[in-house]
Length: 460
Image: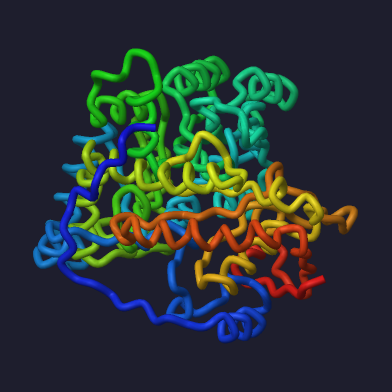
């Protein structure tokens, strides 16, 4: 671990945190159906539920918003954003949308035509998986084996198992694969990075079989930082050079700009060179998102996004950003909390299955840990395990577990100080003392897809 980099910014405005008691939080959790996603944000002391849209925008971004052109068609803000995107990614076509899942919505069905009803990934995250399933597709994850061992010290746990992916392509038939999508960084398995070599290898497979290769680009800049730090031959390359090389290996991307572009709303579709696909995206954006030159966003949002894309690639910022998360992870690990190691980019993923071995996957150890953390300390994390990524098999009616049982502590960008992170570490000291007494949960109501957001549970 490098020496911790101080925050490369000064604080100009603050937001108060309302302090609650343990007794009050116990009642709040019960009222929320023991699902932390249903707790009101003003009842949370430190919110590590997600890093999506929760970052603090800079003075430059706020200033840029004053330039927002709110014209319905042909707004100048749209063209300023296009110029930035072309400079960064080197593609011909970009379409703003209101967030990442909108990007998936307007793109995926276009790639699942005819017999193309399958998709492959290093690991689908929940909304990406759901959009593929909504489009009638079946999806397959092929993470490397090291990703499934939280203690394995492997620099690129986000990689795809290229041999396993190619074997599945041969089994199904390449003509039935709608796309391969690489999630950068790999959120489902701990915010773990993907190496450039792995991208080159899977790109070669996609070219060999004529399959579209996409990038889920929500955390593209953090992934580039890890490549620079960990991969031979990239230490002297800039973040911008690594990003450009990465995206040239793919045919297109979807992006939730609410992560590495540090905005509160926004997303992008990028297509390298496919006029038919471009026309298809335009045809779906207009009925779903609005006219193409605003894509569901205000002009001021487009301006903030254009600035944020560049700020999110700044090396000093990324060193601080990844360093803050890394320091939290190392502090937890040193006190005996098992985590996905090495620490990922946007959050610390506590291995709840290993910490609470007495709770089986179908009783959701990550939920048990999340709930205890909230009641004890008012800290909200999110379960990334069988509650979030698992599902009920429609044929058997039984739970299909996730590969790992994580509690994700996703750190918002430029929001919390080191003393906030120290508070989170202290909260785990109390949990470690009583971990053997924690029990699991049972779902009492759920939606068939993306149940995590609204399901209600009860303790066992």
